[in-house]
Length: 268
Image 1 (cartoon, rainbow, N blue to C red):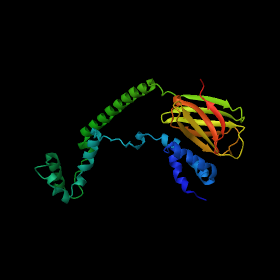
Image 2: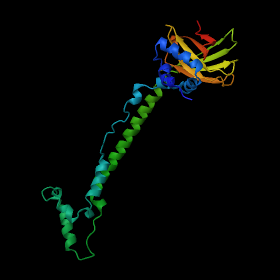
Image 3: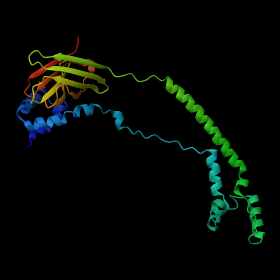
Image 4: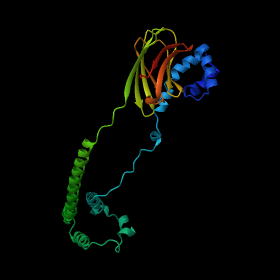
């Protein structure tokens, strides 16, 4: 069974209805099981939305600086200028023309190998011709490691000195209604988006959906949660409100037919 008024549930939960519309919709909820069922399912929505901040939509990808070390240059030189890298097509590239690249030692080495009989060409190890660049690369890598250790030690020391973030303010309120006999124990935690609520009820009559209404010191109210009374006695029922903890004046547990089961005022 569906109801066309379920389209108004979102506006009702988010506080977008004016007082007259809210009263009319709450009167409709009293006699509409479909809307009450949907309301119980959507009740956590305001609290979840309040937890979203503008920073959640910012691009958190940082630019990664590109750095080339001396070791990288030495490795690149060793792979780019080996004898096997000089193919016929490579010599036709303007980059490797006589005016752009000339190495007398390499040319003499090539002439010596061409003049030698087959199988007796002199093989010159690449490592022998690059001892100096490799030594520079190792020295650069060692220096980089020393710098990294020093920086890491300084940052680690500073991190130990940074004080931990303050714990959120949390309070507990309790009240027992003289007429209904219902007792409520409420834990409230101050959050950046409002207040996190956890309520435990005792001696609640079964079979009635309930809502938790939060009222601030200016008379404004906000529904912090809906639930069925199928919860076990004393079971923790979560809720949330955008009202700051310091501004909450009282909390009320009200049935779907607007009977106040228990009123929990802020301690004076």
